[in-house]
Length: 270
Image 1: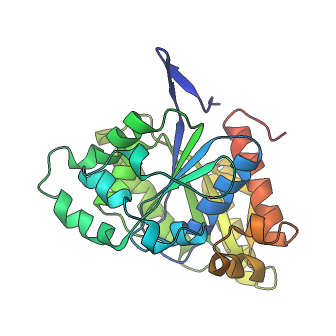
Image 2 (image 1 turned 120 degrees about the vertical axis):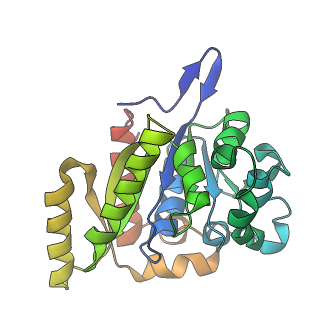
Image 3 (image 1 turned 45 degrees about the vertical axis):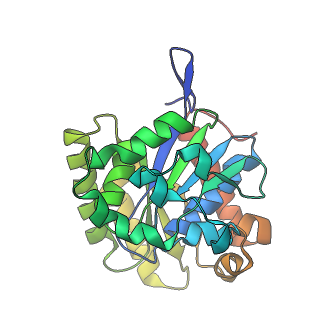
């Protein structure tokens, strides 16, 4: 059980959760923006850090590419402070540090830089005191950017698509998390695994869900995120599905997931 606001001296420390899966198309960014929105709705102060060069979390929160003068690239490379790159999302209580196309070059640029693995950790440590939660939307790869996220975070939330090779991919990610924990970040833990894109008409979805629960036990959230047209439509309107259609099955699932996350963190949704 954790308090989202950990005090060190008089300095408040936010709870930092990386949302990661090295496989693309698993609902990672959708989970990041809707979980962040749901927590903001229950009066948590949330910062979403878009660390994916595709910048889908930024687009999904309506941040125009022309507005992204300062973004995670400058923050990680060291050209800007985190607080200078923060944008308001238009959703009360939810801010974002957007990503731009330059971020795709950051992996190469960081290779020869001092403390290349801890750039994001240092930036968040110096600029996110006012938040209760910081979510990091990781790129779909296990490179230097994801390593920065795992070193900065205290916990990892893993979205897992209900498909045939799901377990194989997540086992690889968990080995990486264990290596990072051993070498860089002893407090890192798996906050939970969320099953996404669940199709109740498809027997494979049931089979995968059953296998994942058998393999990971209580680490798997009870909430399952269904395949849902409204969830797919929402990003093209620059909105989380919770703002686009609160009543749809996808929105309700993300609200339940937020409630589970808060419960694991030692809070409850009011």
